[in-house]
Image (cartoon, rainbow, N blue to C red; front, side):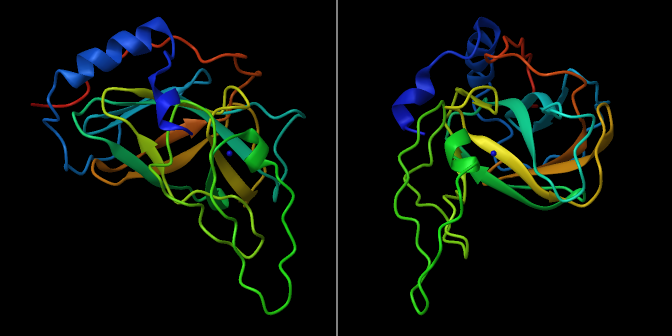
Length: 226
């Protein structure tokens, strides 16, 4: 579907300005558990909030064919802005249309070929030092039977924007083993879980056409209550 130093890169002028505006909120909603979002999805992406965490332009990348086949994988595209004064982490994503949702440091890891584990030996993946706008917060990938470089969480630095899925160096949120066929503009529920901001559930849609080659500029207004 992240070195900390790279988290400072600008993700469009609108997002950078928005991050500063959100930071001024002083983490008023830190620790709150956000209710289900009421936004209506559009093919250009949907917006949702989990306390001081703003999710913008959330969409499923358009399929290369007419649709995503059942059992295939799909990648999310979005920008997450942490508007609090403390770091947070994206700890998980769930949806009824995928058997599993995994977090990866970049596109290379998301498309890696599973490694064979010798008989009688534990499956380990070692340390990951990814590139992109976010950070793994020093955590190691979650060991899996297939030895894929899966991350247990992705760090969201305070006052910063982290983009997902637009370019190969960015972190990836991948819906794996789809439980049904998905067509462009088709919508379904999805839940994002954050370590401090809690969870938010909303509806996302599959994009109609291929998304931008670079992270889009997004204007983000105040998203949390004082």
